[in-house]
Length: 521
Ligand code: HEM
Image (cartoon, rainbow, N blue to C red; front, side):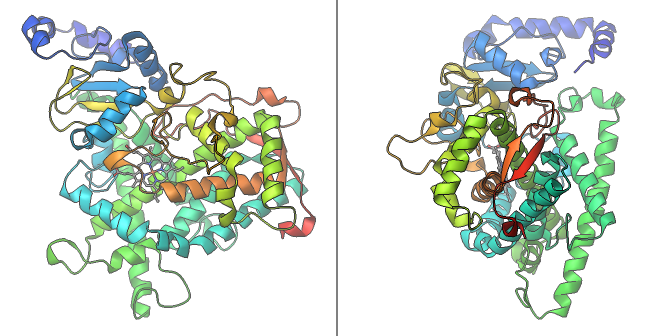
């Protein structure tokens, strides 16, 4: 973030008195004695520590934890912030003090892009969030409901294999970002909206393009650290037109969802009830059939749109980004690829495709996914939490409305809890007693792929299935090497900051079929 010129001008224009006042408050011994904030870097008046953040804030925050200790306090503009990459502090925040830290800040992106924080993921703690989350847990993401979509997932897994196979026949290298993105998106939109956007039997190309375009803009805007959230005066200038962009995307997203709801209403009218006909009802059908709040016959359209919006944002990119990282690390380490394939050959064999029922028996692949989450969690931070009242952590005072950046990237690279942090070593996760390797945080909180406590990811079982299935199929069906002219170690593993944290460059690799030809039909 290089906004230095603007800030220097700001600092110089007649704000001296405010600055002096600010300094005197910050240095006030009485305040410090009573309420000792956690240690942190010195801060500037007005902008606080904003200027100390670079392109990769998770790395900057981790360096601060190395310097100041496991719990660091910063002031970003006028917002109190704490950050940590330490398992014990994370457990304290997410479990012991969950009641205090389970809220969310009301950011401008959340207001514009999540129906005024009317969704689940960005809603502050309260009855609305509770109700929306319950709808997800009881009606959309139940084991039974997810099982009812297993046929779709199986079809999409086969479509993924076929797509890669046909590209190998044309001797094209594979753009894994594209194929894995399409796999996640199709799985999610089939379950949510009842249609797929990529490959055969898809919605029209224009609608697919529109959908892709909107979701990309949405992800980008949700990931931006928008200075207007920290410095209200920034909003007067908004030099990059960020808020204008948010309002534009808000309108286009809303039009898109209105169209989806309208289409579903029309189709429902021609049927007697939900579940009628051959097709499994999708999430929109289910939401349209649920009663609303306070005795209303139906949920409001805005609530339905906010939920659809959340599911698309939460489910697609997270699994696609994780899969791309796992593929990159495995192709970079042929030793690991060999071990994955030995396991797949033993558990599945060459005469059938991997099924969902195999996934719990693929312990080495599960270690690969855990190791991927350690080094490359889907997002560099959890979605920011916010405290609802003042509290104490490790004897330090944490004010009300403190924004909490739990650094999952920093946790996986914390040298106090992990050896050889930059080496991809799936074996480190093997259970000593041979039991199934779990892809969750566990008691030690040394990785945190799906968070914990009240705000933990409600889609974790589906997310794990989508990730394991895509990887299992791709490694079972193909051998993978870097593109011509590159060595294994040349596969780049640089990340870019955002709500999710993809590789800077899309992963391109060469696939070679390893099963009989008829298996790919
Ligand atoms: C590999 C895939 C996935 C990963 C790594 C992942 C990870 C996460 C993480 C880290 C959070 C933030 C928790 C916090 O702030 O404490 C989250 C929240 C959430 N996830 Fe996932 N997720 C995945 C897939 C899914 C899927 C498939 C769905 C639904 C279909 C989903 C729905 C949600 C929702 C609704 C929230 C917000 C929960 C709340 O604030 O109460 N996620 N997820």
